[in-house]
Length: 154
View 1 (spheres, rainbow, N blue to C red):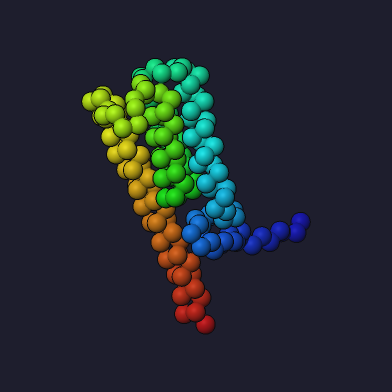
View 2 (cartoon, one colour):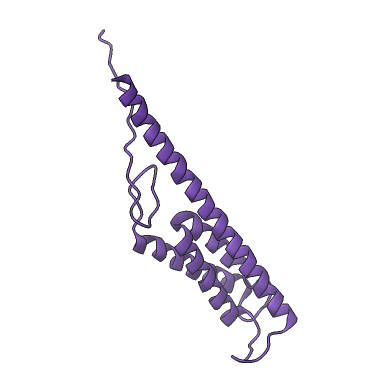
């Protein structure tokens, strides 16, 4: 029998687009795709929150939006994560917090819920962006280490 010779699989590197994220297993994600996913996640979080708890029930007004922020920041990076955070804040405030006038003072409960959401959403987005930056740095180092090894062996 003849032996089959197989060469090791070579993973193709795709360069990171300007302002985009390098994707190790496929094509780089387009800006419109990343922001579109962020908007879709906020709308999905709204629909789930509405279906489960209904209108003007101020229990957990932003909990579903935090998950949307987390996934948007993981998938799209800093910009889409912040878009999901602001979108979740606006939608959650309008639909799930008790009505208040445009210039009226917020109650202590509403102010606390909004502040906690803003802190958590910002922390999620910053940590995800830090993760993406670390991954990009490591991918760059691995890519350049391979070039250095090839040039040293010649």
